[in-house]
Length: 447
Image 1 (cartoon, rainbow, N blue to C red):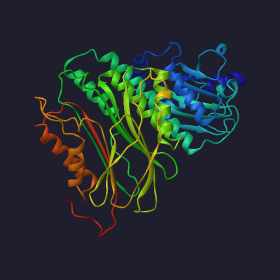
Image 2 (cartoon, helix red, strand yellow):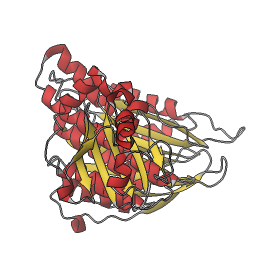
Image 3 (cartoon, rainbow, N blue to C red):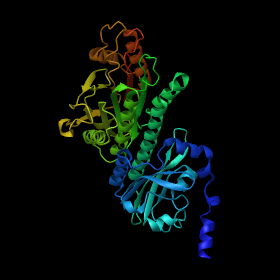
Image 4 (cartoon, helix red, strand yellow):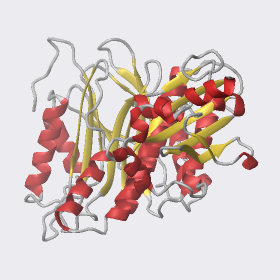
């Protein structure tokens, strides 16, 4: 009787309809990950998940209509195999809901307590997030397993979500690489989609700050795949009242640059949830580049971690740079200061101890602002290789924006650079501006 009841509960008809959706199954097949060996790229992300959460096991699974295949399975005995029945795995729940599943006590959680995997794998607690295809179908899951019941902190679940996104991004980039051999309008659309995936669709609202960012592409080369660039930026909440902002520039363009960009963006997000010192986060990024070696491109990056002092009373933070142009602070009175921090660029073959960095502390008071940028703006010049826009000119133009809000400031910088270069863009440019919102009645006139 028990066997009959189990067969009924485990029948395919009890699976969420999304599991057998033909479009989802096609997306799974398109990944070309099923029945392939373990890889360092995914194992490194799983190892990071274990380090962050303290869990004993971590998995990245891809699920078709009958089984959950373990592309990465750390903490498991190799003789245990690399898959289990889709009906026995919590992965089918991720596919059915398209959202996270956090079970702090697997033995009592009604969603998973009766699944065979709970006993077979010794699951005490389970925390997982879905992994998505470029088209939005749930391919499987990224999860950690603890031997005993336990809670997961908000910082740990946020890090898991970030790592799951990085897995999704890695899959998208691999498919883009395979498809980049196509030409014409389809190739151009692919390049645009890939580029959009490497930049946040919008910046979050940060209490007490006025923020804006923009990415300006170089003048087109005619090769849509090559025009996928390595400039990137991000602004995100880490934990408590703490925030982080990063600006990076990968040497060159194309899919290789995009691979490094994706690795950098998601590694920084994951590490910033655990570390408050930018120099430590950059060191960890450098180590990830050395471990994964997705490309031999070098990367420059500038990173801020900061927190508000009080409502509309400024912020305090730390800054570190890895070979990146210095951040610029525009004080309330229009004075511009460079925020410098020594550090070499990051490269997978450069020993970490040769790229030592340390933090620079800074404070922004009410009305002060900070600009992060890539060298596309300072190296702006006409098509006939006229004079560079330059660091000093950038500082002068920033002074002219005294009192302007974030969006207005960036628009002014864009116009000045375009006027200097006669509309020609030799390189891509990324700009991010963070301004402490002035109190009413204290706003100076814009320059």
